[in-house]
Image 1 (spheres, rainbow, N blue to C red):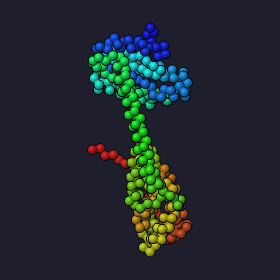
Image 2: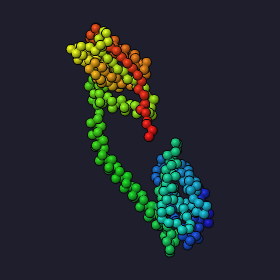
Image 3: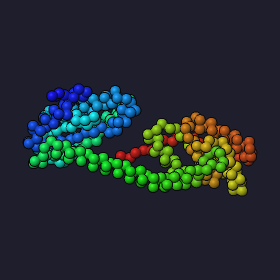
Image 4: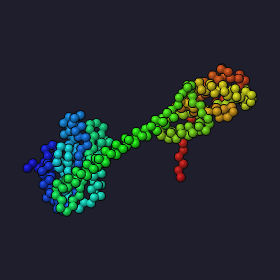
Length: 307
């Protein structure tokens, strides 16, 4: 009788049955391991790739068993492991999960080639069981696990389909229909929320954001007259809207001031932006007796306070 499987080097079908039967009376747990979608591997990549998958599976299982455990190949992509001794159900379940996680972990690391996964069923020896009894119970356990997994995935897809309608509704509700190009005008409370959102985002990104404060004053630096404020601020708002990019944000801060968040901008560039706005404002309708004063600073990341 041939002791070892020619391809994988583990025990052959007849040898593994004989060895397990010889120690079965002392108790133990039998595990059946089945490679997932193995036929697809052969069809898509060829039988040489399939053979390599079988060898890799045997090697991985061999790394996970104890010295006295028995490992063999009993079919095309089917392996058995027998752990002799007093094995409880929870220990068998834990060993099954460790094997599945090992293959799952190897699959995540796989950059090239074929990532493997296995399905596992197990049975624990009860008085009077023979090898075939244990094997049948392990196969039943494996089929039950596969059915539960299939039903879970099926349910998951149905649930996804149900809530995809909500996702599409959210998408439609939140999507902005831009009717006018230019910067993003918001009220001050919304501006503060965006400001703080950017502060938090800067904790994990290197994005540069600058804040620009624009103030309309008269020729000697005082506040402009009330009857001029509204028209001059309306004009300045239009200048900001048309001068800045669509990703920038601005808001009316006081009766004679605007605040700007210039995205992806350094302080030097922010000063150039402010200068461009000032010149455009003064040459396109700004009161010739008024001035536009600006101040710039780079936004810093939010500070995490240690308790």
